[in-house]
Amino acid sequence: MKTQFVSHRPLVMGNDWMIVAGHPLASQAGAAILQEGGTAVDAAIAANAVLGVVRPHMNGLGGDLFALVYMAQTGQLKALNASGRSPYRASCETYTEMGLDRIPPKGVLSATVPGVVDGWAELIRKYGCMDLDRLLRRAIDLAEIGFPVYRELTWFIEKWAETLKRSAAAEKVFFSRGRAPVPGERLVQSDLAKSLKKIAETGRDVFYRGELGETLIDFSNESGGLFSIEDMADHRSTWHDPIQTDYRGYTLCTHPPNSQGIAWPMIANIVENCDLAGAGHNTADYVHQIVEATKLAFADRDRYVCDPEFHHVPVERMLEKDYARKQFIRLSKEAAATPIEPTDFSSSGEDTVYLAVVDQHGNAVSLIQSLYEPFGSGTMIDGTGILLHNRGRDFRLDTRHINCLEPHKRPYHTLTPAMILKGEHPFAVLGSPGADGQTQTLMQVTCNLIEFGADPQEAVEAARWRYNPDNSISIEDRFPGETINGLKAKGHQLNIRSDWDAVCGGAQVILIDRENHALFAGADPRRQGYAIGH
Image (cartoon, rainbow, N blue to C red; front, side, top):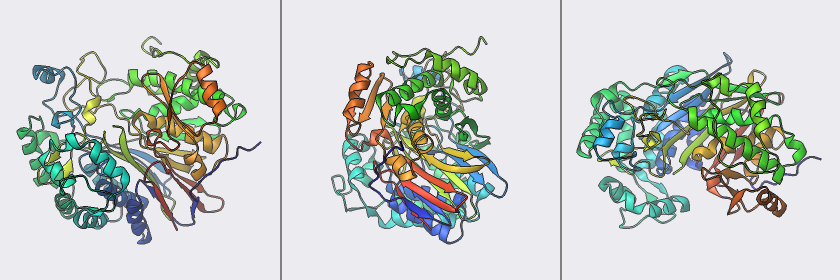
């Protein structure tokens, strides 16, 4: 019997192009570019720039970016890694000499070189047809004249008030009235508008070799940071082939390490051995099997995923179907596992934005960008409106750890852009914010689409859960009582969340129907997602 899904938002459909992004104003900006004949890449950059203005607690010029880009003319799918590296002067020894036993959660010492601006430049160089002067125009306007604050943003500003007020520049922006702005009041970011204008007029070098980079370095020096001219000048994004696996006749594609994306196909490889459809959608047996597969995949993810330029990551071994079958045998159908040890292959905040775009030519972009935790490092560079991210938090000060802090090294990254191919062409462009919940949300949405035939809106609205590092499960209250009780009976510790809880991500999907030349989009009501099609 077909699973009956319920959706409260309409399924957005189009014939020519589609965009779904983490805020309506961002989707509008991308849609305007598509209407002008811009590519999916052009629209993604315009939307991303606006997201940095209207969701300043999630992303911005001080963060990193990952993207998957499919070009219809060549049939080529490539992965862009626009994540930054640690300063050359940064090392475990440097930090321990400062009296630190871990990376500070906030402040300039938690930051690596921001990669997003170079990421935009690389996307345009390889696949774009418009320049930054056009693509950043809407973001500049919204920073300059302001936009209406929404309830979620007010909540985040109030929650992180103490951190933001430690930065004079951030306090000036977010508490200009002596308090956090209330919903409907405008948030004006004049300094950010000026920074965006400089990038629009002169390109990426103003950030890495010019005025903005020099301002960042001066600020770092004044704040006890380690950034240098060489750190900025030597930054480069890198292009890669995506990693992939087959699942029920589809191909799941995502970013290779240093991204955690490999966990998604690893989970899929394990649960492919399960009869998920037979278990029934969101039943206790269904949820249990995916959770237990997640534990197995995460154990290996946490042991091996790092910057592959510093340590070997056994990607091929981790994605082997035979290995997945062995992992499946470890999975108990009746009892929740306690924390799991990773396989030894040697012998044989939280807060992110996501957007998906498909243009009239069939090109597709899956782009994810982040400051990592809310407001990143909480440190705004004076006179620029730029909040630095705190992605360096994922380094360790243990020299034996694969993610130990070393000079000019990329940290472990949670950002996971995704695409699902059917044959050689994209079937779905998808992703979600949510730290290590990203791959879990991806797996649940994938199952909704492939195992149960949900449309994109149904797939993102269905009740979700998230497995936590403490071995508990955060689960939305919309799950049936028998599912909740059944999971407890199997030994799972549950944290019951609200019906639509942002901790379970903010998934967005574009599904491509090649036979009917139609596009379908789903935008998650848990956050600010919004889809526009034509």
